[in-house]
Image 1 (cartoon, rainbow, N blue to C red):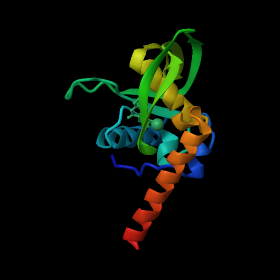
Image 2 (cartoon, rainbow, N blue to C red):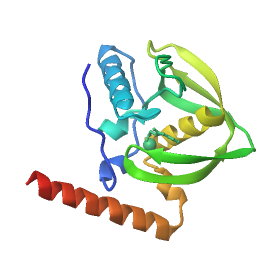
Image 3 (cartoon, protein in one colour):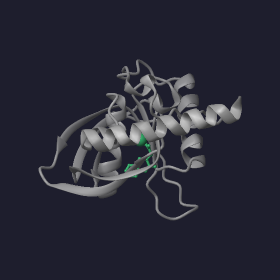
Image 4 (cartoon, rainbow, N blue to C red):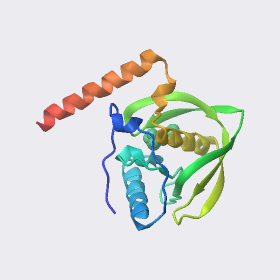
Length: 174
Ligand code: GNR
Ligand code: NI
């Protein structure tokens, strides 16, 4: 297992649409293991493959509250089969948009079908925080980030800030 580098805005790769996985094999499991390790190290509660530069429809999640009770979920080729009309609001952050947070409205319940770590067909009902998180991750598969739901002004300000931070880091490295 290895840690992978998480891409941050602004980066065109994050805007790519990810492609369906054809087979859940050893290589894909290796990617999922790396993603989980990278997510825990960050730390974060979800990670999409595109955030580590791989445009495949793969997501890892763990919204377990307590430390030491890891409950990882692996979603390959996830599809929303139903979502509730009711929304809930959570303060969202994103490892690809570091240090920025905003309240986002999303359906508070959804049903997802997907392939698991072993390539088996599964379904889950996601509610509350899990529903928000699954939808946040599935947005990544379409090249969508939570800042896309904000006003144009807010979004522009955030991207400018991150762009400046990136340039500052580049200067230190050089
Ligand atoms: O770690 C994360 N926390 C989080 C909080 C609220 C809503 C969504 C998330 S996902 C985020 C990790 C991430 O960027 N996944 O793509
Ligand atoms: Ni994210």
